Amino acid sequence: MELLSNLASPIVIGILMGGLYVVIALGLSLVFGVMKVINVAHGDLVIFGSYMAYAALTTLGLNPLWWILPSLPLFFILGYLIEKYLLNRAAKISPDAALIIAFGLALIVQNASQIIWTPQTRSLITDFTMTTFKVGRVYIPLVYVLDFVAALVVMVVVRQFLQRTYLGQAITAASQDRQTAELMGINPSRVYQVAFGIAMALASIAGIFYGLTFSFYPSSGPALLIIAFGVIILGGLGSMVGTFIGGMIFGLSQTLGGYFFGPTGQLLVPFLMVLLVLTIRPQGLFGR
Amino acid sequence: MAEDVLLHLNNIDVFYGSIQVLAGISLEVKSGEIVAIVGANGAGKTTLLKTVSGALHPARGSIKFAGEDITNLNAYDIVNRGISHVPEGRRLFPEMTVLQNINIGSYNRNARGKHDENLARVYELFPVLQVRKHQLAKTLSGGEQQMVAIGRGLMANPKVIIIDEMSLGLSPLIAKELFRILHEIKIRGITILLVEQNVWQTLHEADSAYIIETGRITLSGKAIDLIEEEKIRNAYFGV
Image 1 (spheres, chains in turn green, orange):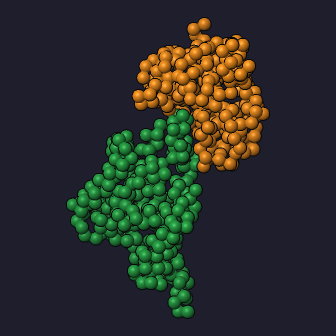
Image 2 (image 1 turned 120 degrees about the vertical axis):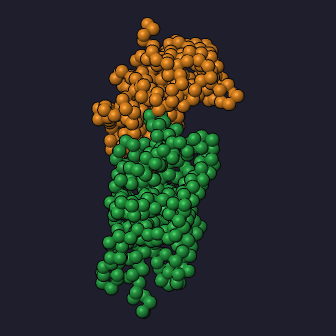
Image 3 (image 1 turned 135 degrees about the vertical axis):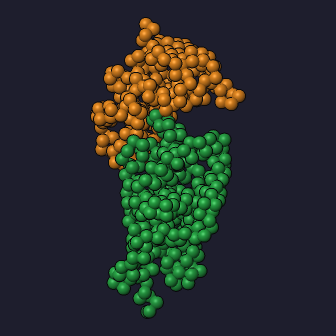
């Protein structure tokens, strides 16, 4: 009974942390859905987002939440240029070439971070980092609530953009049928550049909230890539709702796994869930 | 008469790799006409249309539209000029709604300002689409999907609409209804370039026609005259 009566805490934390995973996974999902390229650098770009927020915090004293505003256009432009001058050219040779470029990008980002910020662990510490509040018998850190709110806001904004604007609909159309999209007057290269720019902006947001929640070091990225993959597999590719539910399931099975099986269960259980879904429903819970 | 020619193909050669698919194709589409390209499966009809809309580029020859050379433009630029291509097999965006499919047709910069006007016209031509507008495109019947595809093509505000195999896989009744709507589109001042396997019906609906066989044009003229042509009667109608 004692064991079950304390379940409230891992459930609440699991769901809130799931929000963070949703934000991390969205950028990867968007790029794969539109460009059919697995951006293996995504995790490292998220951590790059954490480091940029860290730089803004340590040099300018800027609160990471305020850093979101200037970082969005900055990362968008960066992503736009990376697609235009690196991935797009590589993709013309072969899809594999784009994959290798992404892998190279991951190595560059990791090693550059190591040179600039040393391999030491960093975190985004602000005045609210340690703030917690008590709901019933559960202590909830404020940053976990922020993670969840961020996930909701990001999902709604991205969804509205994809559904309600010409450019968003062009991205949606190109992801479903590239050739026909061209017949609509849609320039696929431009669509890819915008999609990658958005994915980079999402990576920045994910990096900021990741850095507020956990500490990070230059090689934290690949683990995040794997988690993002897990979330997408659980929810199903190309489904916004699926990604959201996938994030929740991943977060929940991580905290509940830790609760019941100790620290070793924290990542074991979510990835067992991933294997389970791959076996029973390979297209994901909400996939088509 | 020359200024009446909206679209002019001059001696087009098209290759897939080293295989020649079109050889020395020349044709003219006059403003305000329904022009049909008919012929057997594999004769090169779809290739010809793809070359006009910029999805493929000819190795030799030139394409002029409204007096300007469009031979080497990209597909997405050609839509801006006023050529809209309704591809074979409808090719709707399956996970988008009917209305989203129709709306994306007006993506090109010359069509956006006329979106509301064109949407009203599309609903006027195909009232059923207004009823179905919030359904996913993949849930429609074949005939309704073809209506969405044509509606989407009209949203581009074209001078010429190219329609590839409009009646393929549809019942004769629905095909007949779609041909009736083509005449309404023509009355509204839009030129139509049509590719069909259904030779008999098409020749009765079109103003002029080109017969294409293994990548070459073998006969051309007024559609009504071609119906009487002995060679065609033998080859396609079996009478």
